[in-house]
Image 1 (cartoon, rainbow, N blue to C red):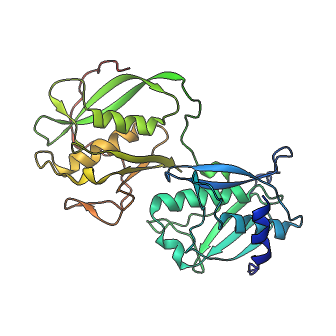
Image 2: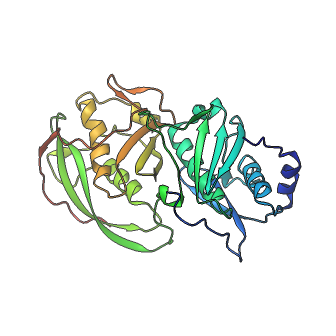
Image 3: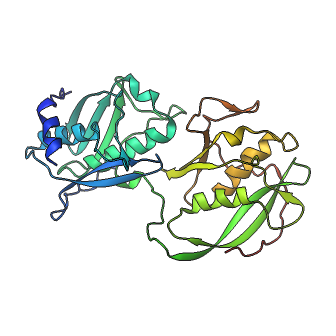
Length: 313
């Protein structure tokens, strides 16, 4: 591994699979550094004027930028200050980047966004077609112990919805609690929404707003507010405020969790769901449902199909 002697490169910041062919930086914009937005829900690119010319020096300069504060309240530093980059190595078109053990201190949402931002920044380097991560000397693995492996731009899916003030119509399938709170009931709603909101956030907002038909109720505790909703690499990260911990014991805890999970899993972009409270995934919801778990769709609690909902503007 090549050690990162980056001190002189830090000053420059103030002046400004693998079978795929490596992407060239755009000639009109040069490089972009990808940062995490202030809400911690997505990554954003910022134009960057590269000072280095040699490939190794370009990689070093980009890694320094990813570990530095951009100087704007709109974005956060990509690699947290406490996480150390210990080296990198090129093998053909694959770039391997090594981190110290503090990498594991990132919460799940931040880790995925950090990973996406690092990969998208580094694949701009000529000859770099894909990137792999090593943490504390071992290949990066997910929560189930599966090695993440090589990553490219296509490894990450971002939320849609960039056009402001455009109104779209969509049909969303939602799962609410039944009257007794021991089962889920399905409801389809036709909704009009602004296209600058992701479908994932739209679904959670509709769950909070509640059903349009009698005999159903919102499973999510009253007074809960959304902090953020982000989908990356097929995993939807739902972050609520502390209101989510308010308990309505008339609704079973599994119904609360799977109302959210099953509704989001109706979207083609979502394979798994993780729920957090103010970004914290260390606790549990009531007794049995860990916030650190990635939940799959589970229709075992469905008690009836339900009817079509009403149109909502």
